[in-house]
Length: 540
Image 1: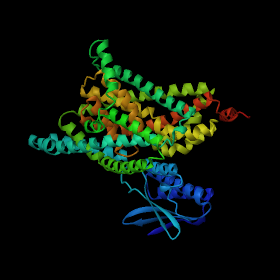
Image 2: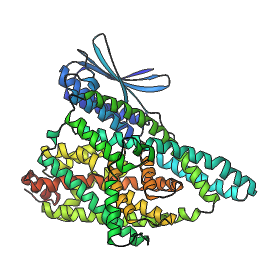
Image 3: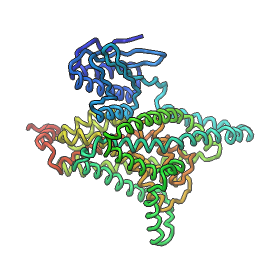
């Protein structure tokens, strides 16, 4: 069965805009998740804009069809053969297109027949339940099953715990651990290569990246101190100043691996990130000579992400196993103690946003109310969708209304989405300390330093696939010596705060871009002033 979305038209920017709106509405009618619909919409726009640039105003069409039970979106344009993912005349564009498609989690294929270019996007299957509903159902089912099994004969509960649950848990964690290292390596490597070229890292770019990481590391250092006090952690300082210094120096030196394979075998995440960083910058410097490497890395990354999606789809089963095992072993109080984590996270979240808002309003010479109103649209959309993709357009519009020049916003906003995730980093650090508290693990100072570094790196490197967060918690917990069984609770809690985290990250990026634009005199003061006056109802 085939449905024509748009009759044959002459390709133009107006047609692309109309295409995009109709496609989004149709995808929502197909009951597709809003995040998936937005990803497909952006992917389609990317391909059509490329064709418009290379083919000019040519005949085009868009249709939705169903084959072998899977719905597909097909875009077509007449003219010479032009595959956006294989643009030989512009390798950077081709790599950027593949990178964007993978970041969006979109599967696509290209064909060229009888003078017609066609791109086919495979629509994801409709989920009967959302992610949160599935997790809540798994938790509820585990609690009910645990309640019933605890009242069954001891032989029955022991059989479930030792013969069924333990082997399933170990197998799942083994597969997850095996994929976590390659996933992090490829994500960091491709993230560096996607910068484009070293010239992109101009003065503004370097300053912006410096601001991103300075704020994130400063925030996580404060979070680690606050968490140690809040949860009453006993940090093993390991002796005198000389011993402490030796711990930290050893940790830093151990980031450099003795060979290329041992970090992946041992799961040493800091060493994996180091190798990925070195490889990424080497490929970036020699990108035109080594373009085949980026293509190979992209293909492998697609495979890894596909596997991680499959692993992530099993997360509710994994959580069911862990919660059921915790219930049978009498560790249910750990679940009830989760309120301590949420209180801690929310307090830090509010303090972070208020602090950023105060600095932003003072720098931009706005009242708190004016600054809050300007950022509200982006915050609300981000918190309701938990998607930076969904709020990207509104974020760009907010930058425009703030008077931030395009040379800052068009470069800085996409870069910030990739490199600036302070609230997710806050979540990793807070979760690590909470799990140390629950598990009764006494961390060393070196472990706490590693947690600070990893929290920021994992927030930046986490890929946008369902299994990505699972892999990140696996990496963090291994480094801190936290039992793997605690990952289920961590996943459940992170699903709840993810909405707030995305909103905090997106509004934080906009505020930082505004501060940088103000410092570099790259802001339209008249536009900012007029917009502020309109917010108060004052005539210009």
